[in-house]
Length: 419
Image (cartoon, rainbow, N blue to C red; front, top):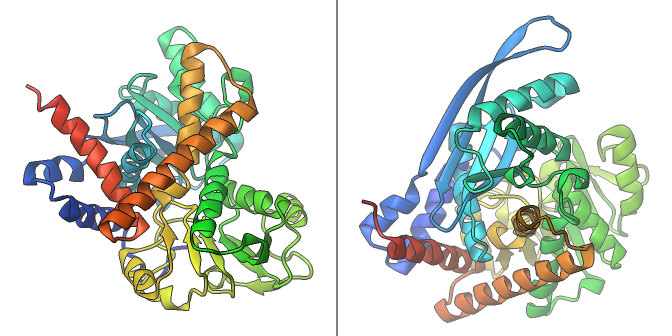
């Protein structure tokens, strides 16, 4: 679903970094250190099809952007369109995301260049186990901890955990997060990113004197983040007027019946064709009349070309990198606040941290305790970001980036350069 004039993800990530580094007046050496990934692994591996019809060579990546503040943390996605530069950008954003919410992880990202919809579940298992073996030279509970991302799920994390454990000779649940509860997963992990999106939406709406009871919300993307966000908002009486997935979108000024939309997608595989709603395109979901827009699909969706057509008064990013720097400048000019991804959807990595801690301790928390801890982390981070934005008279993305980069730079400077 990329927009026509969207820059690549790495260009976006570096542009955001450079702007924040200028504000922070980072020295030249620190800029060089933080601009580049610390480690990159590219692998090529064969996988046999489960029907014995042959095999294929697949390409995979694992990039560790920075591990100064702790083990590398980041998802694994299966996507035929993913490039190494995409993975580099996502790993960098993970570094800042972990730092902005002050959890002791560095940023990483992994990917396999594959369309999983073309493979059987058994072949996906073989691919997953082989990929896990290839990246095991980086992976470990104290070194690099993968989690789910685009087109990967709890079962895939279970296969990665099991593969690593078989090679290690003992069970190592802390090597991945986003696992099933039966093997050390955490309560609320699947919903965590949506919980933080909803949490910061409430805080931002209050700060901007926007009554959510009367607001119309549009959500682009109806996957793990978008669908859960829609469900939580609907449960709280908020009117969700538009949603979309890869196939298309829906709009209803009166508000969509979100539980019914969820059932429709479960039965048909898409929100398209839901009865009683107006059909809109994926791009048009961003431009429908609404007070709140939640881009929760993929990077580069709101650009300099379409930003002026966005009607929302508040934007809360559920996806990673959905808004380009050109669009950010337009929103700043228009006075439209954008709560950035590294703050808004940080609930996912925060509860992943909780899961990792629980696995290490072999002591697990109830859902209410996790929700309370998550709320504390997100509220603190939001307050720190908004204070910095006020003090420096800048937008929230700049403030969040400055807060995160300063924390990583301080840790780097404190540790020094080895040897």
